[in-house]
Length: 100
Image 1 (cartoon, rainbow, N blue to C red):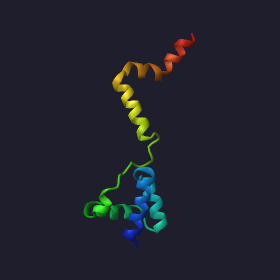
Image 2: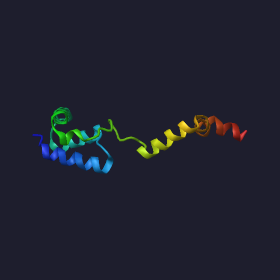
Image 3: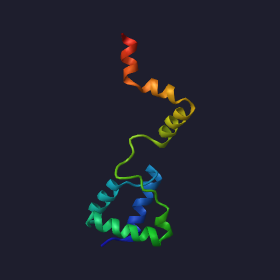
Image 4: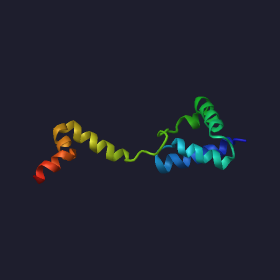
């Protein structure tokens, strides 16, 4: 049986610590609750549509992103300010040509 309060509490913890939840988090949660991941996702989908407390959670995708949001914005800002500079500094051929 999937208990609303238990799922709500665990997703709130993920929201506070990681900024949202992932598909892998739902799979682990389903194992803890002894239900199928598909059953949990279906129930969660219903709660997100009908319950304000669940609609606040952020889904981060299947897996946790490899970079933080701050790192992403820093890269994006660099690309906007000088795209050629970012390309040259990240281009592996640039290092090869400098060593010749």
